[in-house]
Length: 116
Image (tube, rainbow, N blue to C red; front, side):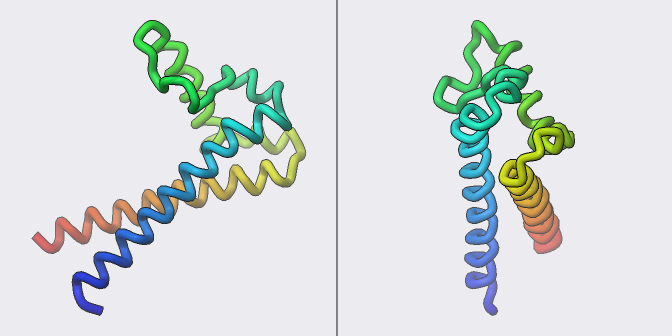
């Protein structure tokens, strides 16, 4: 595969990972948690992507909400206490896309450094 075709495939893969990750996070935050696990959503501070992400007047509160949400999705096993198989699959899909996208980004970065 020539360099241009190879680059197109890598860009398509990275874009696909990014799109899927964002779509799953939006689904989890805006639909699934509020509807099926309202108490957990409230514990996270009721984050929503519909409001401006960071309002200057409430920046500390917004940062806390999003850090709790990121921790819930990527670092803790709090979701397991809810005993919801669909939530478990959703969380693990988000984690795999995050790690896969990060690894692909790192690989692209290292390859671009090597080519210079």
